[in-house]
Image 1: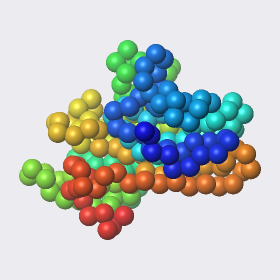
Image 2: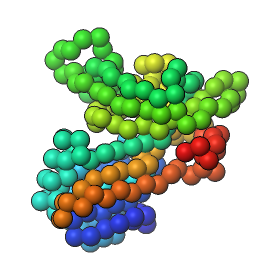
Image 3: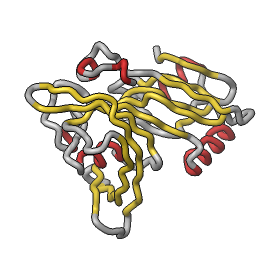
Length: 219
């Protein structure tokens, strides 16, 4: 059973488990699982990578999907994450801005020096929550607010600065004892039915590695 945080005639807010696809034709995914659990009418409006869990929002009808998608494009749909990264950011908080190129064949994004065909601007802001030492090196817990929603954006922007996410071998982590340490912890959006601002959050399992390395009292 998928954990449901909220649902009405327009939206479903739920927790995506790690390892489940957001959307997939002919395969088990959040869309198919929610449709079976909630009685159909499930429209995806954003995605999380298979190895990432946390709060997701789905529309219940096409009109709601259109309104939520428009709010994503305008920046009114706000997504925040927790991530565990190798190393420590130089500043306690800051903004990362890059130009990203997605290689569809490799399903991987890259930071590039200048715009060209297929590139997109990427921006996020982060706050350092805690830093600890593990296996002789530093790792940090950071809170992230996305300004844009590019493929693997958080993963590639931190990796390009020498701070790959723990468990993210695709972008340079050598730690293979956990899934990609990224969690969708808070989403704020307008309910498409009546424009009420709604906010839902859920923290990762603080008893589970690597989240158990950090002091969550600082969050």
